[in-house]
Each structure stands twice: as C-alpha cells, then as structure tokens.
Length: 272
Image (cartoon, rainbow, N blue to C red):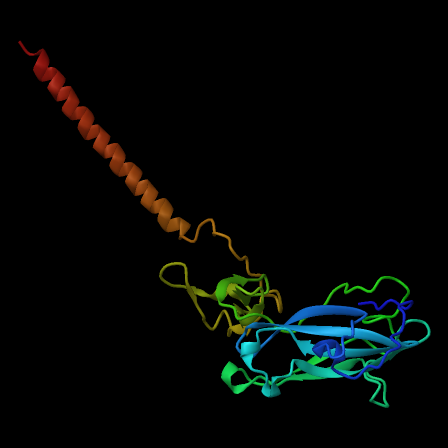
C-alpha cells in the first residue's frame, strides 16, 4: 500500500481511538478494511485507519468492523493503535515507533467475548521490511491499497483429489486451499525381466528379479505417474489372441452348420 506523502498533517488534538470512536471526530487520512479469519473459519472485517500527524509520521488505529454481537471483551472496537514513520526516500522506517529496534510488523490481539464462542487470536500485520519498498510506502501518489495477502482461509470442505506426475496426492478444498495428503510409491527391480508372472496382469518378486526398491515416481529409475488417463489395455495379449482364435473357429463351425441346414431345406423344398 501507499500513503500519499503530500497529505496535509493533522494539526488538531489527537488521542488514540479518536478515529475509531469519533469523539472528537477525527477523519483518517486513509482507511482500508481487510477480512481476517477466526478460530471457527469465519470471515471477520478489520479496519486500519491512518492519520498523518507530522513529516514522515503517521498514527494508525486497528479496529473491528464486524457484528457487535460478537461481544468483544470490554465492548471496545479499537484493537490497537500506534505511530509509524517513514524514511526521506519514502520507504518504511519503523512500523511501530514505540519499538527502539525498527520493525515491519505490528501484533494485534482480538479479544473475542465469551458469548461469541471464538478463541482470542493475535494477528501479525506485516507492513514490509524497514528500509525497503516491498510493503507500505510513503510516495507522493494517491493513497491506495494495491494488494493484501491473508494467511488464513474460510472453512472449506473436500471438493476433489488430484494426483501429480510425482505421485503426490493433493486434496482440494472448497475454500481454494490445497493440501498434499499422500504419495503413491513405485517399486523398481534390478532385473525387471526376472519377475514371475502370476494371475491377471500381476508379477511376483523372484531371486532373479532382486528385491523391490520402493521410491518416489520419477526418481531412482522409476517411471512417472500418468494421472486422469485411461490405460489402453491391461490384458494378457497372448490369452486374448487365443480366445479370439477360439471364438473365430467356433463362429466358422456354426456358420457351416447353418449352411448345411439351409442346403438340406433347399433340397427338401425341391423334391417332387
């Protein structure tokens, strides 16, 4: 985000909480609301107000902007307040001027009330790296929030599963998150041709094949997993060819029987 450097500094009396509580009415220089997520997977709005109070100096207030029925302990929507400063080149100097060592983050605790059923939680607001322009800046352009990243998500249910070429099984959830939950192992043998064919399309380990080495797909000589694909054929071709020939012979024999019967009927019809 950026706070406009040429914003006029507030010259009146300001006390922490004035922007949130409005007594006396103090209009923030810039304000934005972001959604955070509580202990039950619900979305909760948190507002951050900034007020320019001097050269390269801004006061900020973090407040809860959601349903008052959540009963914040003490009934006060103001969660945190402080002062931050910027360097002369517009980069962040210190996100919390009360700290002698420059920091880029501010911790905010939301004291949910007992009737809300939520656990008290602490948020870490990361405004960037002191001395860098990778977060909050103070340049002479319009104050704006370019983007924000929330390390959390709404409650989600399992919506699908996918398997990668490396065999990793990934669960997909309705809230957009994904989670790796397993990996399909593959077995390799020193002499794969030494395996013993058993019923169906399966093979058994023998002394000639050597012991199975279990590993990940695509590593150690193992092949890759082809996900969401139907294999062309998993049958024993020799057996299937034999069955085909047998069926063909049976069909040929049957047609001869039918032909003979047809000739006999023709002969019978031609008798006088």
